[in-house]
Image 1 (cartoon, helix red, strand yellow):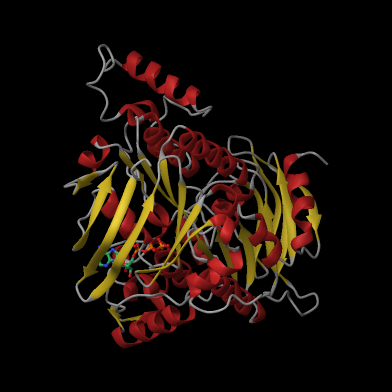
Image 2 (cartoon, helix red, strand yellow):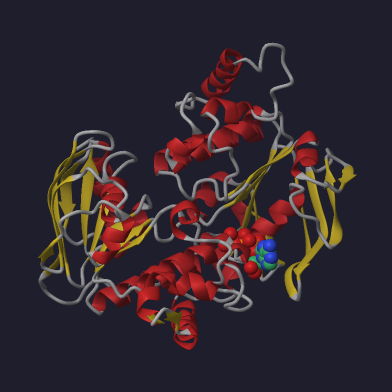
Length: 500
Ligand SMILES: Nc1ncnc2c1ncn2[C@@H]1O[C@H](COP(=O)(O)OP(=O)(O)OP(=O)(O)O)[C@@H](O)[C@H]1O
């Protein structure tokens, strides 16, 4: 029998007194796609980073294709055919997409270092995988989803034996996710071992052969996918039976409008075409559409990120003159939870306490002094409400697992006590348990009178959380579903895709 492509034996890792991985062992055969699951902070990314040479283990051994290895850095891992696509993307912002794709390979081919050569190579790589990418644009000027496709392309273009993907589809629309899953299957068919970290259980059951579940750093389930069920996997992740939970919909009748958007237009991309809608106090309104259809533009405009959008806006009964900057949006009474927590939302060096209280700092400040005790109390209340898992609230946000960083981001905006909450992908990268907690929290806030606009690419989230769901296509609102339920998913997708 062939040697495993990857063997992980009794791996252990601690950060100070925090035991992050304990005696973790499993194998992945060539051509196998293994899912690595677990709640936020369970240790998945840490394990992936150890396998990929970004950090070292304290105990245990790694074997790649029968050879015992200990990589000093990711470069060495790549040279051994181990490629890692991390959760937080690493790219050179000022270089073009083509240059980023070819980065690190420039010396391998004659003539390859000329701009034309780089463009040709990048185009060949992109075409081979059917990716349509703006190769001449700089990385920092393209949307997050495209940045992600570039990273994926880089790993795929290199000849890899083991490919680790850390939540690659968290930020992707269903169409792009399906494309990516198709690519992963192609890789596996070529004999590559794929380790797939995801919080999307349905995706794992569609595309993986085996599943390994981490809880609190220990492996608690290792099984063929065919021999288990989503319910069983969720139970092992949570360490308790997975209960059927339904987040209740709004109970109250009509209330005054808290947000009125009236005739918004944008001629230049991203285009909006005469968009009008309202969100009542206590109501959660979802906006759904395929990428570029408009929902994200509306969220970003409300966050003050798209000056130049014309039309009228009212917040809590008062007309807003201009949403030209994030500060103006905030002053208008809008709390915006951005989709991209790293570049728009969180300073990773801040302590959790500071990050959670930052948006409310003016309230906590008296005569220029931050009232430290109040700051701590606010932060600890928010950390509890969003169930942030950390060693202490003094820990830098950058040390938290990705999902816990997301909880801090959501929590920090809740503290602002704004009348209107704009939630852009609020549960991206968040595990099933925490996703439910965030959903409950958002419902609780709505019950207390907040108006919420939910922009999510997760159609299931859109239908279970929204009281009303608006579907957008090509910059316009094309359909409204008044009381969405799980059965409304296909209706929403049909209208979003234009097949209706
Ligand atoms: N550089 C670091 N310093 C201290 N602690 C860290 C560091 N990196 C990770 N940790 C801790 O290790 C634990 C595991 O984190 P890890 O990122 O592996 O979780 P994860 O399972 O990938 O979670 P998520 O689903 O949220 O991405 C967490 O408790 C985290 O706070």
